[in-house]
Image (cartoon, rainbow, N blue to C red):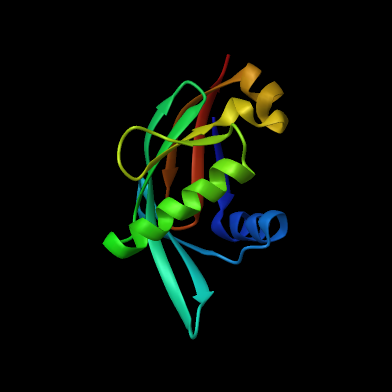
Length: 134
């Protein structure tokens, strides 16, 4: 089975839930570009490519690349993710890799009891989640 989530719905959810305005754009089947405008002295848009590198059970491994300077900034953002999403996101052993524990999200526990995630891909319209029933 396949569930497609359009980029604009993901962007709206992140805006509503975390009050963060981002833009998502297709790069390739495993990678999406995430852009955010930040204002320090002047406004600047920063972009990182985020790839789904592996699915292990209910854990998703995401690797991000934004260039050396922005990768350092992203390391700081990782600390925010770990604090804000306690128990859901952690740094994996590989550089620039985050491990997302989907079964740590209370709203997903019943769903994950009944499905097996098979693959997450991207296309020009959005994210595609392929799964099968248990």
